[in-house]
Length: 390
Image 1: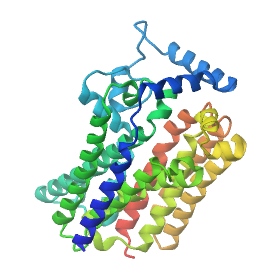
Image 2 (image 1 turned 180 degrees about the vertical axis):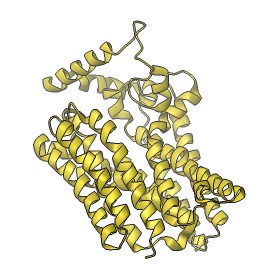
Image 3 (image 1 turned 90 degrees about the vertical axis):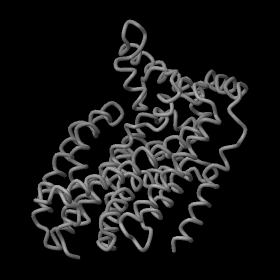
Image 4 (image 1 turned 30 degrees about the vertical axis):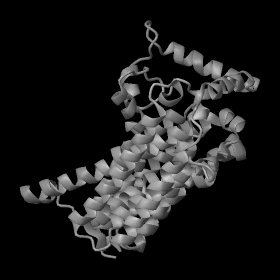
């Protein structure tokens, strides 16, 4: 089994990087991007002009936006332009996106029923050992494999970024293309190596953490890379994103701490939560409707329009969570089901008071206020799984 897994990893590594040696982003491409930008539809130009004005209002007198250095390190919009290659490398991995994966590993550990926590009365040796295991597993899910995902996504988006975000590290030339390719290799192979080591540490006869890492890395590749480029499809792309942020890190943490605890019931619950993650991914699509339409990206707001898409969005978020709560009640975990219901109701209230009124204007406000209830709902479900005997 281990030899089969290693062969799969070798195939993935070759696939993930082979296409990276396409023709580099030349100055000609950049000039073509600039020309395309000049030919952009008037509505898009007005949208870009408005966005530019908003950014200027947020800038300091010196010309850089508030907390631009921190934003650069976290890989979010509005960051300053760094010159240190290691700061640029960190920016490519988008540390702000590591958090959901790290949380997912914690949920998987809770669902395993074998995590020795200090609040459960575990001995100092037991809880520090398990805490150390969790940190290593989180390092795998966050900096290594999410870093790989974000770097390879930026690589395949380099031509679009040359038009829309020319200050991004790759199209701006702040980091060479060979350095980017090297970073993709190091993060991918480093992540797969750590995953295999975790299976050895856990004593897993089936290298489940390693196989999940291979699968997740493959999904990351086809999400960003042609010809499949799942991100171009509203349904498939958003679901792949939701599964990568919820199901896969949960499965990774649970299989690491207690492989025998993973079963089809857990797989169904996490798959449902990935549908809720699809809804969260749709929220992020509203702010880029015009750009997606121009670039031929079939996001759900582009396909269905704002009014229909906003209801699809909240429907996938709410119905899936209510289904999970109903399932927990049906299997006798009533207390956890009631806690989960208590975490769903504020989300519904915030949807009606912010998001549904204007999903384009209030997307960030809704995300900031509602997502904490969603992520604690995931943890509640994980604790219920750890408590229940299936």
